[in-house]
Length: 132
Image 1: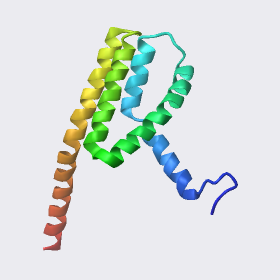
Image 2 (image 1 turned 90 degrees about the vertical axis):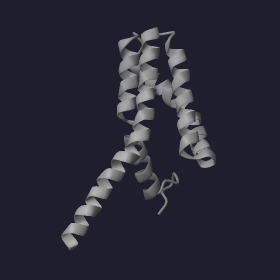
Image 3 (image 1 turned 120 degrees about the horizontal axis):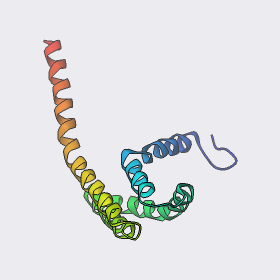
């Protein structure tokens, strides 16, 4: 069922899911770094950042389609590095903190498949014991 604007229920649900996903600890960390090391308006920073991020998000989806998770991760690390370079105009410390956040994201990406496989394996093992 399409509305007059062309939005479907699926499109609205997916958009809401994406919106809640974007609001993540990494984003909170970036906003904290920016607000802590500058006196700029967070409202204007967010609004302009949204406009600038739209084409970057589209590029990220394209990179994911062509190069998979590792290509996308490389692209995201590159954008974090560029962010750290740009942030040094606000503060060198803010740039370093941004880069450290990127390092923790990489560590998280490497660890989460291992941790989730251990959790899923343990759940499957318990189900098998119960079935016996």
